[in-house]
Length: 177
Image 1 (spheres, rainbow, N blue to C red):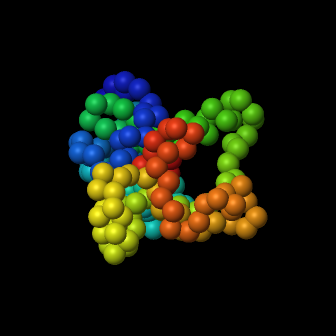
Image 2 (image 1 turned 90 degrees about the vertical axis):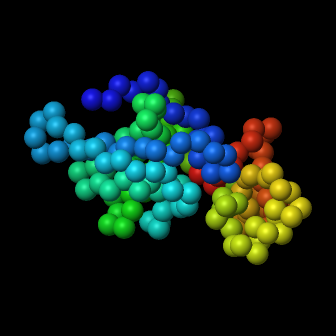
């Protein structure tokens, strides 16, 4: 049995520009009481094919019984919560799960911010776009704006193609953040 050290709300683990271990295990229940299914794999630097932009992907192969189970790194930190897809194992990052739990405790519901932007993590952009960005800013991480809703809070200043690296002085590197 794995001893869990902490729930990882640290979104830096999803910064695929930095090198660190991407080894993870997905845990799920079996039919027998007190039995676990364990599948090992790695974090994969891309979005899931399912219709939810926040879902990331691991190479762990789970069954439908693994839905809702934790995705854990080899230090015992919970990285996210697993979903199921035949081709891959999508998961929602732990910092999003933690925000949802905090909202539910504070407000009795999950509040989703409406900022009017659709963004994509920089490493998922087309190669020609990445080459131009990397030429001008070799060490950049953040998101690229794909769409700005009209009217919205972001409509007046932010334009499609803009790169966002910080929000309120806090750096981030993925669309899920």
